Picture 1 (cartoon, helix red, strand yellow):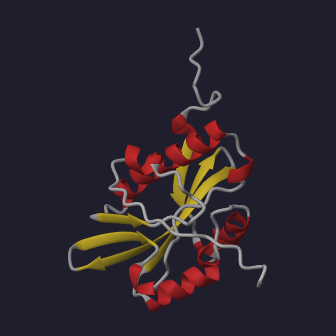
Picture 2: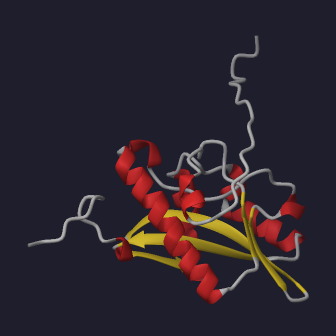
Picture 3: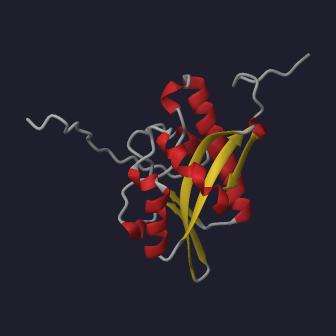
Length: 172
């Protein structure tokens, strides 16, 4: 008898998370453009400026399902004495939110959205806690990413912040 998975036949261990190498940075902005969570602050040029002016190291983590990138997140690493922090965004850059980006999120079925986000976060945690071993991980998501369940399931402390979004195209 075959083992069937609730996520459409994909084994969750098939998702691989790794940091982009500098020669792969070219795909990052395309990933940002294809995600409804991507903002100007997710763009590589902006991230490099923030890295330079905050005394931190930029990491771009991506999650792969086969050859397809299913999610990404920029992190800033900062070490103060023996205390290691990974932040997205880095607080001293005065960026309000950053967090993960999931390409084509709005076109995915609900179960696939949840699967990609949940499993990416699980595998990301395994990766960063085995390789970088931070003491604190701080993530503030973009306004369009309102599902915090993957963070709750991974034992993050979640503090919702509410805001209003107003379309200002009509100046009247």
